[in-house]
Image (cartoon, rainbow, N blue to C red; front, side):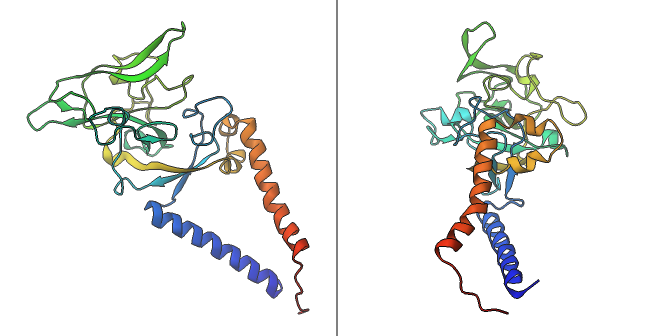
Length: 269
């Protein structure tokens, strides 16, 4: 390996290390980003910049650096976070482990949080519920039934087993109105996630939150999914594959174009 090649490899490695270090300082987590592997957060079939699609890279902020804003807080006119949006909808998107387990984390939107009231019962910030024995609340979150009728997402007689968040994906076809926590929907069997031991996922405790979704880098993560076991790559849209191909082609072509415009006069070694 001559000195020129060694220098370029060294500079490339240094640039990658510098980039990762900067992202770590910015997010407080390592690795500072996750690759989205499923379509549960998609807003439309073709994907869209600004929302979370399969193959996107998402920067993840340490939850100790930022408070989670729930959907109900962001839609409550009296709340200080009223109007707050992230990735195309109200409230924050969180990355969490199911029941604190070790299987693949979930990246879904935080709908609301049940908090213990010092006098007993449960409070739900962003609502008028204070000290209630069970949570009943209808969110301003429009859903479409299989029969085509429109209704609002409803939390039905939920008695939390502990403090934590209720979550859902944004995809209106596969998630959206299907809450991840079965116990919050009157045991409606169409809802609910299971953990690695096939137990229903419960409200997400603070310590189960890996991070809060921040900036999106579209398409790039699809390169990882291409080499992943099925069905990960199956969720990636044709538009994302096309854009990834254009990005890779640009990376390969641009150096040659620059060299053609500004030729280097390297001395012979």
